[in-house]
Amino acid sequence: MDKRILRAHFDGGCFPNPGGHASCACLIEFENEEVYRKSVYLGCGDGMTNNVAEYSGLKLILEYLLKNPHDCLIIGDSLTVINRMRSATKDAGSGMCAPVAAECKAIQRKLGVKLQFIWQSRTRNEECDAMCSLEIEEAQSQEWHRQFA
Image (cartoon, rainbow, N blue to C red; front, side):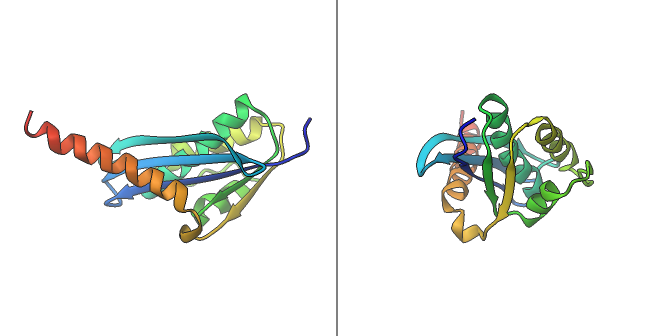
């Protein structure tokens, strides 16, 4: 297996939090060249929180790694997500984010690659943050336009 390491960033957002519009995004690079980029609008309402969105962004990376196994440095601005994924326990926590967190932990256990989880401040995760914001803005715009259809 190629010993070079992928670098992946993820983010999630929910406005307002909780109960607002939520989205997630990931960006994966290999030797400073983009290899995968994805952002997803998750929905709006009671089940949406910032942590649901953050875990969903991480899940995009883990699903990519299932299809493209490679050692990966995973970087996010959610200390909650990073610390939970660093933990050796299967515990996915509680609350509305528990199901998607459990999915992330299950995928992590299936992967036969080395993962390193790194926290960085939101100001250093600008690309994924912008991708999330665009998804939410698009959904809000479509919602606004439906009022007049």
